[in-house]
Amino acid sequence: MDQRDTPGQPLGRILVVDDEPDVVEILTKYFSDAGYTVDAAAHGGDALIAVSQYQPDVVVLDILMEGLDGVQVLERIRSLDPAIRVIMITGSTDATLKPTAMSMGAFAYVSKPVSLGHLHEAVAAAFGRPEHLGPPGT
Image (cartoon, rainbow, N blue to C red; front, side):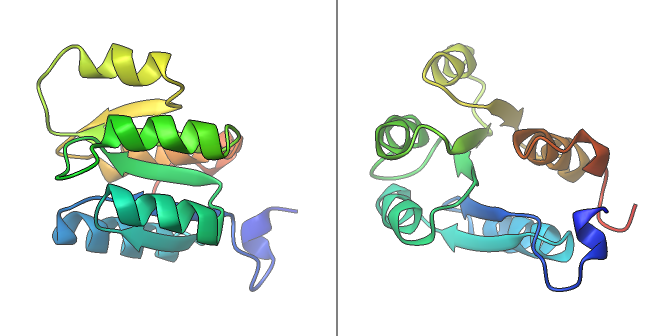
């Protein structure tokens, strides 16, 4: 039985971390509508607290943030719980960021502006459910 057919049963827990409130709002609504439990953090320090508090399965993590950047947060998440899958998102054109993040254990890397369909595919893959590819309701 598809988990989406079980009322009240979330598909998993996602933590969205981005210092752009609009991005957080869009991603939180999108993945909530898709059946996930979604928590949010506005910067790296809050992200680390949220990882400990909510124990997400997947973290969608912006790279370019004030204070602790996404690469530093990724490193700390890996030491807190290496089982958490981290999907990095960024608007940066720095070609060294992707190989750096992937070598540090990021599950996937998605460029901004984020395609919700592409990000959803990465999240579904992180949960090991490629059959859930596509936007909510498909």
